[in-house]
Image (cartoon, rainbow, N blue to C red; front, side, top):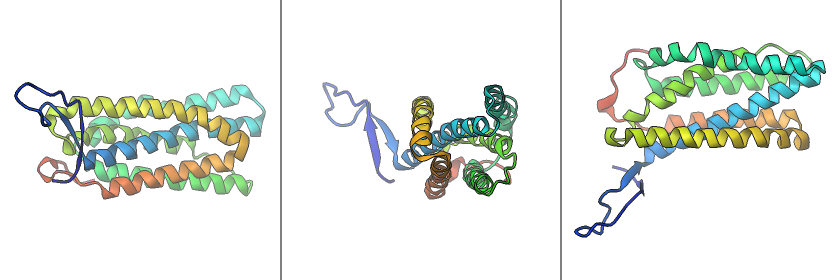
Length: 212
């Protein structure tokens, strides 16, 4: 049934084995790694694009406005997307949104370096609004239902921590290596996430959804 990591394994008087353990299967570790890398990329592009707008316009107001606009799809589309992805193939949604976002950032980098910028930012955020609920809804197809609350909470906590680290790291990356390096890391993070998702196996008994 594959390898697993065991957490929280108190020994009892009658059992010195893994009784009471929370077993984290290998497939869930792939999902966790993909979501973590993905959130790191999200935080990098949020800061990189905000900095880029400031560099191009010299206006802090424009930078703040763009950062705010970047959050709108998450606020308004994600609740509706969460309902939609529930009946769809969540693995495919995650895979394709990662690939799409990676290609969009790559296109943004190319147009930036050639002086032909195009408005990709809202498209990236819209794709993210589908990726986040799919990443949460797929958990029951990877981990036993009795560990669902733990798995979801662990995933959410780790993603938040990594996102904060990404916000801090983005400034250093941009100041030392330039915004192109930040966008390159962003592209790589989405592609690594896509590879991890592609390698992830779901429990066939839990796949009850329509066509993607």
